[in-house]
Image 1: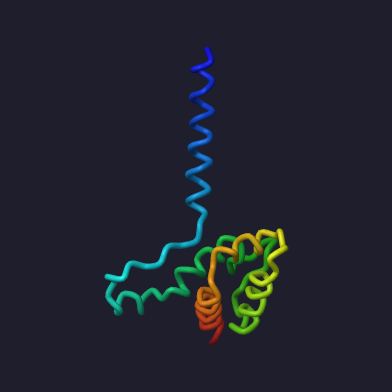
Image 2: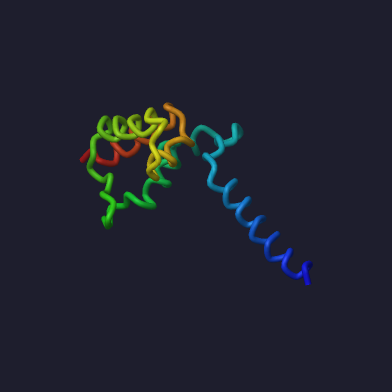
Amino acid sequence: MIMGRARPAALVIGLLLHGITACGSAPAPPADIPESARAEFPLGAALAMSCSGCHNPAGGTISSLEGRPAENIRNALLYYYQDTEGTTVMHRMIRGYSEADIDAISAYLGEEAEP
């Protein structure tokens, strides 16, 4: 009887642990990717994909990042990054990025905003 209960608990724990590791920061791209391929899909584009889950152009309850200048995006991201006591979703998300990542995201989204 106890064995029957242990299996679902082990499954739940395993799924939770897998989910936690899956939510970590993005790994660095492999070094063997040709420079031409990197130029086609820049780091900023890859990192900004996580932003679109909430801040997409279709709108919703969270404002879109579409059309915002790179400097504004960078300043907002740096605010969340430097506020180590913050507990919002943005505070938690930004902790997985470096300042170089923030620069790449801001530059990419800012380029998208330019006409």
